[in-house]
Every structure is written in C-alpha cells, then in structure tokens.
Figure 1 (cartoon, rainbow, N blue to C red):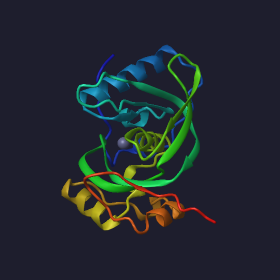
Figure 2: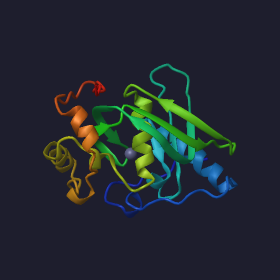
Figure 3: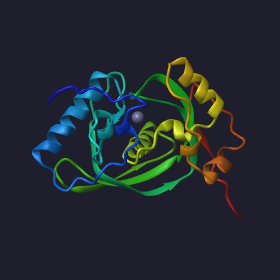
Figure 4: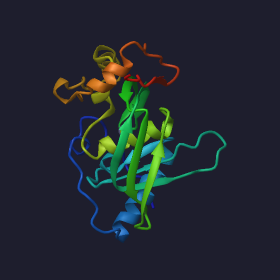
Amino acid sequence: MSIRKIVKYGEDSLRKPSKEVSKISKKIQTLVYDLLDTMYANNGVGLAAPQVGENLRVFVIDVATGNEKLNPMVFINPKIIKKSGACSSYEGCLSFPEAYTDVKRYSDVTVKALGLNGKAFIKEAKGGSLLARAIQHEFDHLDGVLFIDHCRNRFEADRILAEKGLDPVDGDRLVDEPQLDELLADIPSNPGETVVAEEKNVD
Ligand code: ZN
C-alpha cells in the first residue's frame, strides 16, 4: 500500500475513458488500497483510479467526517441505475487543488457496483447528500468527465480556475442537463450549503 501521486487537471489520464475491470486481481486490490491511502492522506472524500493515472473503472469514497469512524466504500465497474431530482453545491477535486465551484447534480442516485470481494451491491444515496454527490463526481472521472463540466456558472468557474493557474472550462465538454437546469432555475447558488430542488409535481 502506498500513497500515489495525484494527476492534476491538464494531464491526459483525467480525460481518458476508463476500462472495465475484468478480474479483481492482486493488482486491482493494491490499486484500491492505494486509492484509499491516497484519499485519506489528502483529506479527500473520494478518489477515482484515473486520478492516480490508472484508467480503470474503480473509485473509492469515504464521507465520514470529524471524529466519525472511517467508512471506506469501494466501487468497481459501477453503473448508475437510477437518478432523479436536482441539487447544487460547491465542489472541489483533488486534481484541482483548492478550486471550488458550484455544480449541478442529481439529488438522488442509485449505483450498482462490485465490492473488493467481487460481490455486486447496490447503494442508494438521496437528498443531495455528500454521498450522492460524491458518487456522481467519482463516477464521472471514469468517463473522463470533470466537475467543472457540470458548473452552474461558467464565468465563476473560469475565474476560480484562473486564480489557481488552471486552464479554463472547455465549452465543448460542458454536460447538457436540461432537466437539472429546469429544476434549479429559480434556486440561487449558495457557497455555504447544498441546495436541493423540490421535485416539481406534474398534475
Ligand atoms: Zn475529482
């Protein structure tokens, strides 16, 4: 187990789609432990394999905070099988040191994945929780999608990226999310908290 170097925004592996894991080999086990070590060493909430230069469909998350007991979660070959609602909150990424911007996310997601033991499991995360947002953030990494591609305000994102000496948002990579835009239309950004859009009932 070791702490690996985190790939920074601008490097190739962050934009490359990752391959499915065919077998949970020793190499994959080591990768998972290294991801966890590297995430904890950097006080991250999640880390995906492409962020350590391995384009494989693996990520780890731990949303425990403060004095809570560590709760590492491992997702191998994950699939998001359900998503609904909308929320927005300021996100960062270990590949973008200290750059935070407001991003759109689904408030509720269900993911199916394999654990490190090779068994399939289903995880539901709701209400715009940190886990719900982290799953979407880390899942995106496996497809070469980054949090800035979901930014609510491109000008704000560009300003923050420039402040950190990072490349601006790539307009061609912005994710088109009309349903999220509609749900979030009347909801202002709030750097201090996650805002969750009410589901609009269609009568
Ligand atoms: Zn990230």
